[in-house]
Length: 318
Image 1 (tube, rainbow, N blue to C red):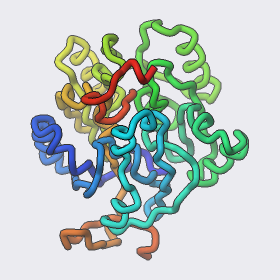
Image 2 (cartoon, rainbow, N blue to C red):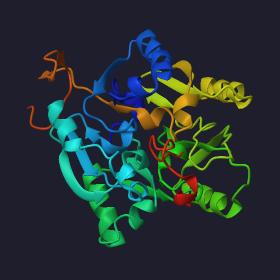
Image 3 (spheres, helix red, strand yellow):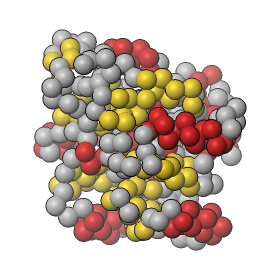
Image 4 (cartoon, rainbow, N blue to C red):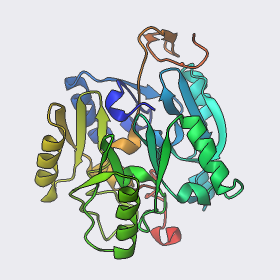
């Protein structure tokens, strides 16, 4: 697997600058300052690119899982936010390997030899025996093991990217929960310890008045090669979170971006980012006929509900 700290090309939804122009302007300034190679995905229907785009296993291999999450089945408006990933991939000349497993990219947290994900994957694939599903995932990811953690009961999406991120091969970062659900927190920490992982807690300041908001979710940062961009929210926990990240990622460029606008609708920086590793030897023509360096097969390649709070009744999600 390709960990986030080895990625060097960032894709964002083409509707992000339209729906959140102020946020996008701030974010784009940071991307340019850090000299991050970034592009927009054409024809998207929501901004949470990590969830529907393929998972990169290595430079020449991408896996497209079935993107049909249960939390988008409650109304036609929600169903209409499901992007046509096949068309998006076609438009960027990407041919991923297709899997019949239902899995959102936000639930795949990878290191080179292992993957962590929430156990919701079993719920969404009841047609596949648990042991067979685990073997299929291991074979697709080409990893030694998959570490399953319990779904956060306050996160109906069941995504791991708001719960756990790899710092190195033996250490993960997790939220500093405030004992709001002691049974879940105990089982969650134990699942990591039993897997031989050490964990470091970072500040966590969730908006307890909203079931959708990702405000206070610092763990949903964007990490790329030698760069970490941290979401901030204009709250007192910001300073402590940034200071801890500077210590943890010593040697990396650390930047912050106020992410309040997108956080209100359920996600932050990792949620909007499809960051991959490009192979400079592969040149592909894209829709605007500029040459980009995207590898693709055949060229030899905290929770959030999506941007739905403007028409979603939070009570329907419980």
